[in-house]
Length: 213
Image 1 (cartoon, rainbow, N blue to C red):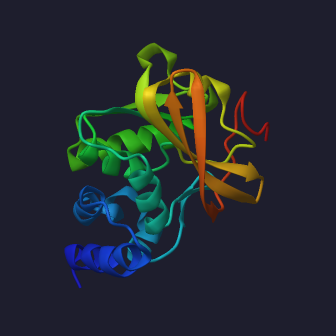
Image 2: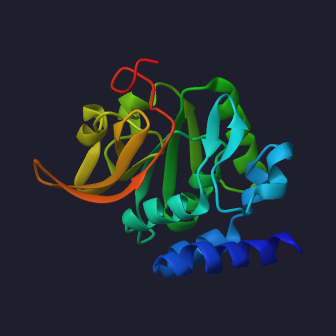
């Protein structure tokens, strides 16, 4: 079976069947070659219904989790997006299909370098990979229309809320070390309204405004 067939099967069986309805999100996930964002040993399972290791004790999220987090961002195509936790670059590639510009922050230099190569090799030119403490966001390029956090924190880091534009949306897993809930936070003026979504488990967000270790 070729990779395009496996991607379509992934979308139909794992995403559509679980309620993902945003046609742009579904189209992006049919298009982005997930296997090219994974190290060799994991590529055979690239389209499986699970999170997979990418090295440095990090993972690439389950396809469904990528889809639901992306859907909750409610992207229309004109947005500037900040992603916290680049990993292999796959989520950033999905975002790049749906937004005008993506800034993505990875704290681990080797992963950041690998993700930048992956994104360049596949042809994404609207993604900027930065190496830094993701809990501090990216103040140089703020504010952002959308912010996506792909690691779990005890609460949403305040610097990220500060960098969210008015009427912007932030999506993040928040909670305990080994159990979180996905939160959609929407800014209206100085007010942050939080919608609580599904339970999830992510690797910890390490940094000044996250977990210490």
